[in-house]
Image (cartoon, rainbow, N blue to C red):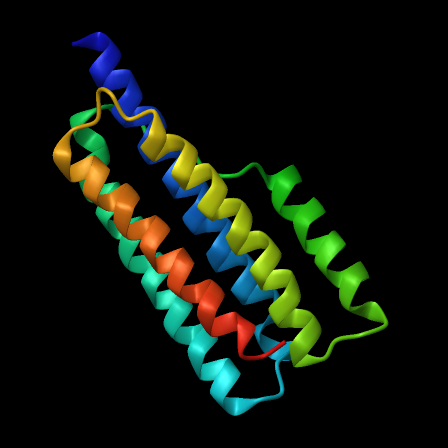
Length: 147
């Protein structure tokens, strides 16, 4: 029972970090996006992350009395600085889409790893995880249009 609780908590923590990274990335680059359609898509993507984040927060108390783990302030600052540096010489929508694709692919990889080792996940936690991966896979296809 303890192992099952811990695996569910850890999975929700990792998903929460992924959602936070996605929302932070969109927040950091949204003002740089020039294409109105791309900007609207990014706002929709942000809302999708927020919805999954809310599902995580709703489920988390079943596994812990704490708050879901977030990315550290240091990681957030470093990610923001790296993004700024990469967009310094080229802040085109194509470059922004490329950076978003890279980050989204990292989220997919982490999500797939969790799915492949899901021996003790409750069905609802597994569903949140699958929805997260499917959402990110759809995002990849969307971002490719702006390369």
